[in-house]
Length: 117
Image (cartoon, rainbow, N blue to C red; front, side, top):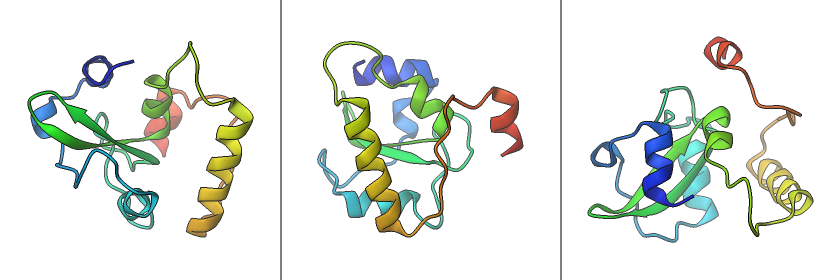
């Protein structure tokens, strides 16, 4: 999914996205955004659990902070990607490095669960 399509799925105006330092943010920069005081999800305003930087046409590099349901909504569903087990191991290591207690959900949250927090 390209960045324009992702922003359309999220219902986000690219002009509202905060500028990022570059299109290749480091893991430390990402953790600083969603660590102890997470940024709001660009789509719904809930605390972000994931962030990425995208080079948005006409705007340059921008942070795209997402809650879990919105991260899942824009995750590439087909084609070549990182094997799921490798992605989960990377996520586990990042969570441990951040010192965060976390649980892995087997299915995405429903809208009602997301609204409850």
